[in-house]
Image (cartoon, rainbow, N blue to C red):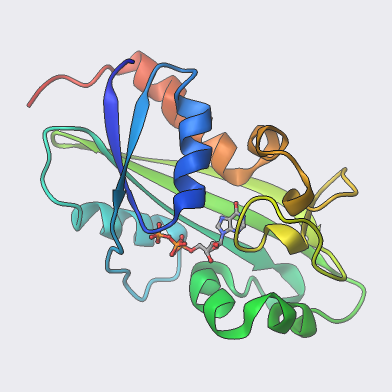
Length: 188
Ligand code: ITT
């Protein structure tokens, strides 16, 4: 296995998806199960940068990730509050909020990377729409209600490979992988 990166997150779904992208690119992603403090901030970039600051010092490169679902008819809500909203309202509650003909939404992810003194953010987004009901058992979180643009199925009905090919996280992770290939981490 190639170089290791430690991924600080409480979410095993995020880990599986990053591993699936980065392992074939030669990087071993190790899960550091941790609920990092999140600030009240209005962008994923700010949250990811803050999380990075709160990761323990390490000789191994570290990554964090912040993501969210931005629903157009709700002005981008739940956005940075996606985890809280899912915990409190659940998918049925979110579906009740989306009324009217415009069901468009976007998933966004920002992966933060730190090695030595160097930090970098990598972002990905995927457009789509909110399904009328939950469908599918794959993935996690909002996957059963998100239909990527140009598809009929929710990401909850897709295989992990299909989802990673088009997802916000897959896009951000591939950017990180390509960047790492050009900037091999030097020991501290
Ligand atoms: P961390 O410990 O990494 O913060 P988290 O699950 O709390 O894990 P976030 O704070 O980034 O993650 O919140 C993102 C929310 O959006 C959370 O509820 C996820 O389930 C959801 N989400 C993010 N990416 C998703 C995806 O690919 N599919 C479905 N839901 C997703």
